[in-house]
Image 1 (cartoon, rainbow, N blue to C red):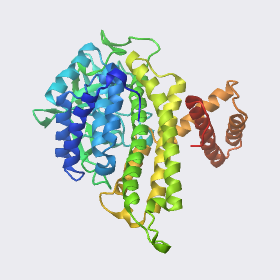
Image 2: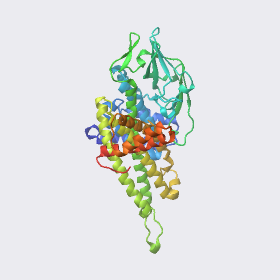
Image 3: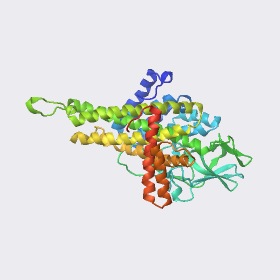
Image 4: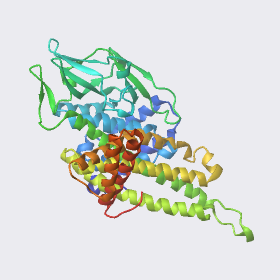
Length: 470
């Protein structure tokens, strides 16, 4: 299941990657985060997945995420998130935004087994991560250096996965040059030198979570941290003669930072489906062997109970269809990654749709399964104790409601430009606009979500080639 990998993935590569997975699984979910990161360091140093595979071998990059997601029902979200933060968000941003020398540095980091975090989300931003960036990074011509600073506690980086142990960080800050703001840019910086935090960096633990405590989550404060000129990932825009120069017209740095969110949404969508498949498979193994009382000593299995049998069949059909949708998206996204092109607007919308619908489908199917298997769902180790994995999926790399709002907003803009579309979508666009004009905030709010659902249905149908209810 998943994107066809052809020559880019071989049985020997998967076998080698699964060896790492075996040792990770054997350690269990209750290890401290200092031990969990040690597994990632070994995986990084092994080169089983190269930091640059996101561009040179995107199918392998996607496959690695899919394989690790198989562990989620036993380990929870911790290691999978740790892995994707390092390979996708941190190193992937360097690949997308870095100049050749900066990208080459990733090989050095890999050889040393160093790991990174991604400093985007700020305390004040909340689910609007990326839309609000108040951390600043100011160019100082006299020192030929940048000064990274959080002006207040609201600008502290928040819920930064791997933040307590990371060696490096891709910090996103508002670039200031000559008294002018040039918007969010990414800076590759050391978090530690010789095992000690660099001067001006402060951090703390976000606290105990319901699951995933093998993953460290941190708040991070930058208090006037000096960065070298080479810290700015400057492929598309950099400092020349103490002035900011955009190197490729029409390409905003924030757009390229956003591309990591597209890959993140794609692998999250796939992981939600894999989680659900795994939970259903392990539960089915139990119910196939659990005999029930029946008259005349019939002894049917729990899997034969009509409501559970129907749910298994429904889940198979729904997950198979979602898999078709994801394969289409993964193939197209892999082509964009290899060509180093931004995904076209229809693919961006499809990725957002996949993230929302895959996670919602997973939550629905897993919750319904839990209701049908009684006390089995309470047993430690059966997988149901890891259901908050799907909660993580729902808000990571774009909260589902925020994504739906954007889908609706984009559709209304298109409608206002004359693209009426289907009768249903046109009616919903008119209703949302009318609610806004009369000051009906609630009507506008709920109408926007109804419109998003209609757009997502159409998107799935167009990508897969036939209609289906998701």
